[in-house]
Length: 416
Ligand SMILES: Nc1ncnc2c1ncn2[C@@H]1O[C@H](COP(=O)(O)OP(=O)(O)O)[C@@H](O)[C@H]1O
Ligand SMILES: [Mg+2]
Image 1 (cartoon, rainbow, N blue to C red):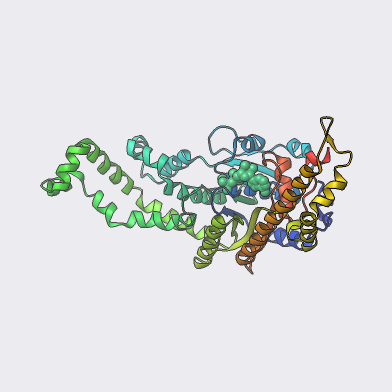
Image 2 (tube, rainbow, N blue to C red; image 1 turned 120 degrees about the vertical axis):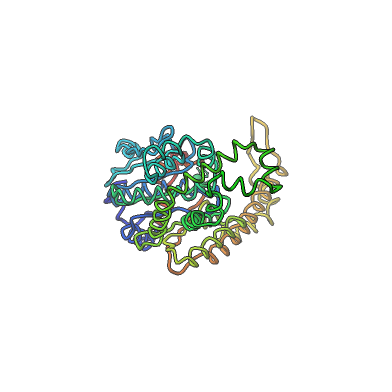
């Protein structure tokens, strides 16, 4: 889509107000953090928003994804692991029928690489950094510690924002068990470094061992884990302690960026019961922490046609008159040269009418949830379920059109 066309009201009854609201929001912000329950389309929405901003509004836009589906990663040119960003070539946009105004860059969030970079930054010297990086406990914790992933996502965001290479950063977040962990990650990191646990663990191993050696816990721990592991543990925490100041200051800066006026949150959810409830909690948690919720995306919703009362009446009539209608319809109807009986046609008609009624119920429930979730001070967008998966730039831009409030254009399959 050319930028000129993008400025025109959407065909098929789009809402230019919505497009304006989104564009104003995006223009005012430098950082957009996509959050929400797992599996609702966070990664896809983050990528779609970034691609659409790059295409329609211009500027240098970077999307940092966490766990893109392989085909989506391929489409964005993100290969293998590593934090390196790559530019999505203009040709990829051209292939999707769009002349982009700006640049789209994409990166993966590489947890290990980010942790290692953090250690190198905060260790007092090169030798200490090397000792930490080589410590087996560090390697285990930095690669497997789920809460740590939440922190590292926010930390990486901070670093990218500090570098200032992009006009807009759209950051996907890790699929955490509890989405709220993400918001509290910087505070937790600070808490950990100031905790009594860490102080206790970093009392020089020998003196602690001597004091505690007579205690049953230590006797058992020593026998079960071996004194080498206990010594490794103590070493690790002593090394960690050398980075305390840097880590605490950094976590504080990360936290400030999340609260900055240039940062906003994009809450993605579906309107199903469980994700809907989780999203409502997330919304409340954002408000409680005074974090700005700029955009609420309700993804994979049923099309509005299901809530149309006229259509519902038509479906009811279809169900009631199925036998009579079937008589008329089956005349001359055949499959593989065999005539189709009126009974069979009536059964299909009734099934279609019932399915419509069921979808209508679901759509009504979705509508209720949507009303509950809609926040007065943020932009709310619903994105209909798109047939097939969204795995290429064309799909991302089509989803972007829905984000901009334009009715979904015909899919490729329908156009054929
Ligand atoms: N509006 C949509 N219509 C159809 N499929 C979608 C839509 N949004 C996302 N998907 C699909 O849903 C799946 C999960 O999306 P993903 O973005 O990976 O979710 P999350 O990051 O929240 O786990 C993917 O296969 C994606 O292509
Ligand atoms: Mg994801």
